[in-house]
Amino acid sequence: MNANIAAELSCRTLYPIVLLHGVGYRDDLLMLNSWGRIPKALEAAGARVFQGGLDAWNSHENSALALKPNIEQILSQTGAAKVNIVAHSKGGLEARYLISKLDMADKVASLTTVCTPHHGSAVADLVAGDIPDTQNLLSINFFKRLAQRLGFGAMDILARITGDKSPQAGMAIKQLTRSYLAEFNRQVSDMPGVYYQSYGTLMRRPIDDPVFAATQVLLKRMEGDNDGMVSTLSCQWGRFRGLIGDSNPDRGLSHGDLVDYRGVLLTHFDIPAVYRDIVKDLKQQGF
Image 1 (cartoon, rainbow, N blue to C red):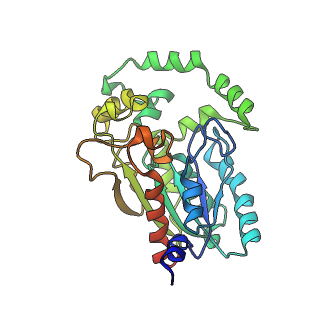
Image 2: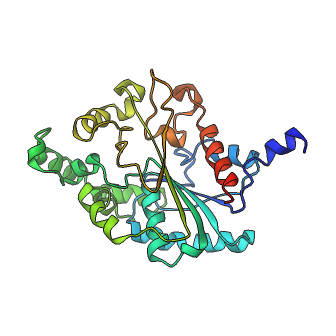
Image 3: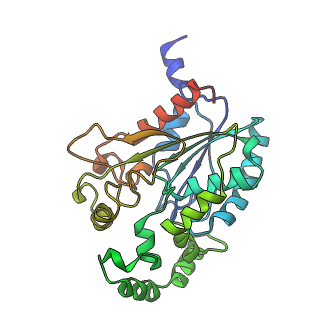
């Protein structure tokens, strides 16, 4: 086979790829693209790429219910028997719920999660006021007042303006807390026949990404190494494939970097290549 043709088909998996974004993003926002250059890079390598069309701020249950017909439509459109889901952050939890609770295990070949808080995040604990006083880091009352002042209601209004039909910002944050995810993991089981794998990343220093600097410092004290939103332990589910970019001892990658939100100039890392490698690996495994 011609080398150029082989390169163009290197990501041509048996099943189409469905990308699921995390909290705060939408697939149809020009100013806040949920996946940056990644979809086009995968398509250029032969992948059939679709996006899940999830709301920015909603519960796992509602998001999964909305996702189910979208995936069924993708299957109908492509003629494929299953899909490969690649999910960032909260999207991975919604995919797990979809597979386990909505009879979609026979429609999903694999679930790859990237920086998903499978065991919750102390950042969500702080925002939701769901953190023990024994942590003694910052005033819990301050965070409660701050959340009340900013108002999940105001977040819902903004979400509606950007396209969400029935946003639930407060619930979306609550469902990322460590206590909630402990119960979620007891109730939402992995399904036989579905391949589960996970990746994470690591901010080595707050300066790696100023947007996540404050939360990186807090999480470092509360949960250890992290990407600015999710600890390197919380991101692990199924077959853990390691930390993306971990080979660079001088500079880390943030939670947001893994959806290419800063682009190459600020990230200094080829994020689309990361996803090409993930999809190539899925192809090699027969998915």
